[in-house]
Image (cartoon, rainbow, N blue to C red; front, side):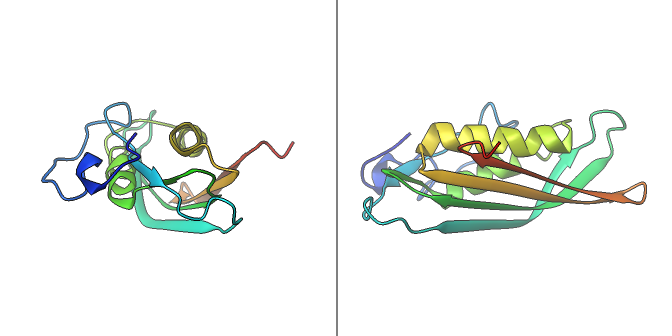
Length: 137
């Protein structure tokens, strides 16, 4: 994680290649300039893709991340590369949404975060999975 000036970012302002998996991806952060204000940041990824772990067929989704930051915000280029790293990862849709939430919470330590994945129909059924921090249950 980076908390300093732009020179500290691993991707922003640098040439880079996509990570092969989320394990190799780095989520950069920067200091929230308004930590006392409970404002919401919404990040929209309408072209998310991954692989079905059973068939190997591609899955696509619209992923939306909404959070109330505390001390840190996620840098969007690193988020883009992180999300793109799922492209060749065989993973169930529900697991993806929960992993994105877990990884972003670990990186930013937000006050609140919601991740929603609206996956395109496969076999005539569409799937929407959502996960929240802190847990609502």
